[in-house]
Amino acid sequence: MARMFGTDGVRGVAGSELTIELATKLGQAGAYVLTKEQEHQATIIVGCDTRISGGMLASALMAGICSVGANAIFVGVMPTPAIAYLTRKHKVDAGVVISASHNPMEFNGIKFFNGEGYKLSDELEDEIEALIRNNMKDVNLPIGSGVGKIDYRFDLRDEYVEFMKKCVPVDLTGMKIVVDCAEGAAHYTSVKTLKDLGADLVAIHTEPDGTNINANCGSTHMDELKARVVYENAAIGIAFDGDADRMLAVDEKGELVDGDQIMAICGTYMKQKGTLKKNTIVVTVMTNLGFSLMGEREGIHVEKTKVGDRYVLENMREHGYNIGGEQSGHVIFLDDNTTGDGLLSALHLLEVMVKTSILLTSYALQILFTESSTRLISAPLISIFSPMSRAHVRSIFESIKHLRFLYKLIII
Figure 1 (spheres, rainbow, N blue to C red):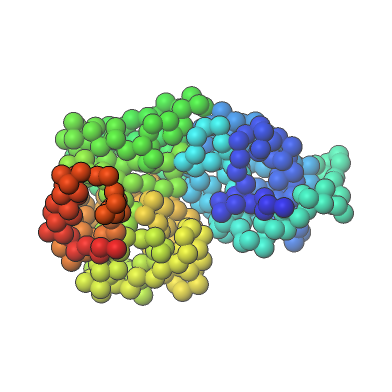
Figure 2 (cartoon, rainbow, N blue to C red; figure 1 turned 135 degrees about the horizontal axis):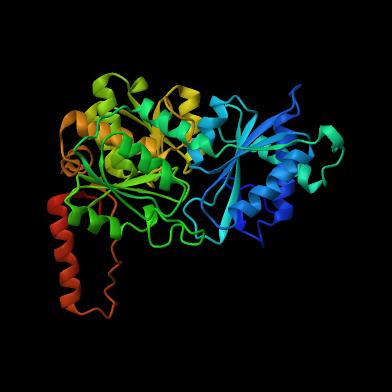
């Protein structure tokens, strides 16, 4: 039997795979497991992204939460990292996000945070799943005044905005920025934060209708942002995914700046300031090969984990590191928040640009892709029996020769 929880909660097509029945059971079992040791009546914060199925699943989930005697606070549309922060700030017992991140709108997911704002361990997820598969055996459901209640606090999104500005109080006055909110959870919080900090902001894909999240926009579809940055003569473009836990950037020339480059830029700046704990950045085994060379050059230890932000976070917490992430743009600044946070990553990157007065394209090239860097490039396997023309083969080798001039290549 397949495990119910994946690498980032329970996900599936809303209504057929992730049904209202399953959402209710997840609310019941999750609330019971996460709060069974509490002597007080437990409270759980619930938020969602902009998918049309979010309200349906939130209602079912909160019904399950209340049915086991816990209270729910529904905060509405909110970035995933905002739920992690609010769970900690308000000292509630757990947080839940209803989102499928960068996936198409028909998908949705349910992800839990514990009271400290961290994703659940495999062991706790297994305990929740076992309870569901055993039909909540031995769990007594209260009646009357023992049933939980739902409170609605849509105003809490502004608390997250204020927290972001406090974490990175950078003055963005005069800086032209294009931000792509992916018709998702960042459409309010990112725009308000950047404007409050003084940015000359051009915001696109900020009108979610429940069906257009991630549709040819956001961090999985960067072409429009690249073109818009050049057209607007902006200093930088910022793209979020549907739940705003990751971010990719575009430099002033319209070129992509990925998670590796963002970590390298911010990590080296932190080292210069003396705030890079143990002079270490945590990445995964999929990180660009040039990253290790950057670390050697800058005196930064590069710690590698299995693929997945949860493994990055586990390593950071175990060893006391404060920055890590993935090439996809899921970057964790552990001094500020307990999970990947797209807006926080953007602010840290913008801070480096403001404090150093260096163009993003120059920084990205300096930090990671110098002549001493190594890049992994896939090319077609050429066989002597291939029907390719000699001209075609010659053009491939000419391209490789050109790349070898620009980079140190490993030819496999």
